[in-house]
Length: 321
Image 1 (cartoon, helix red, strand yellow):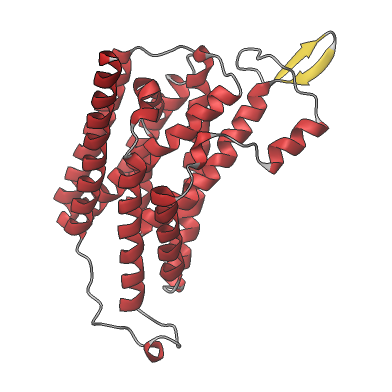
Image 2: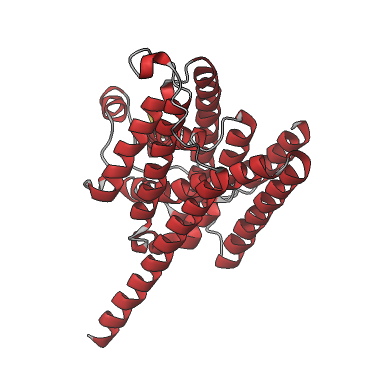
């Protein structure tokens, strides 16, 4: 575990704090190399877990990593909208993403610690996690798409009223001077927008990963691997993000499945006095880890394939017209 944290820290520092600090628009080849490297590293890491601890925790890691990676891709929709809404220059977007992802990792680390402490003492919280994921799945599948338009939250709206904010960026600076007067640059608002949005991302991702594994080490490492290479993925997908039309449906199936799984686990280890007299319901089956992985792979895979087919059909129709 210590070795894993050291290696992940090196990956994180190199990916976000060194490469991410260079303001530039990465080429397609650079993006592909970065993404392929981290995907291969995640696969190798899962293999090492298998060799050291057995198949069950390895499958839990792969399931968690794929779920978090899929949720991260969906979250890129919001990043695209924020960047466009605040007119972030292309050459600065990589830097902004690196800060946003750093904030996301810190917030998820805090949520993971809190979540692990809560579920250790209160198993009934799985009922709440499960219900939350089912509601989220329903909204993804049938609700209005909240990602179509970005709305500033109350914190950012209030901030605009109480401090001076310039209309133009000054590189990576948060503060700038115009006509002898100090101003905050729009970069501050962008950081706050992404940071506060990351909090909402954590509310989705942490219950989902705890539905697949209770091991905080696997929960944290799967989240780190899901965030590594995310800024390169942002530039690689680019305009393709809005063409992954069926990804929300695939994610809704995954979250719905995990929500049901959490509720079944809560019933299996029940302690609530008004359910079965406070006794566990052993008749409720336990969902095997391999089934969770199969559902995740098939749901995301089919959604991605269907999106590609739909995209090609639309392009063909446009070409004919």
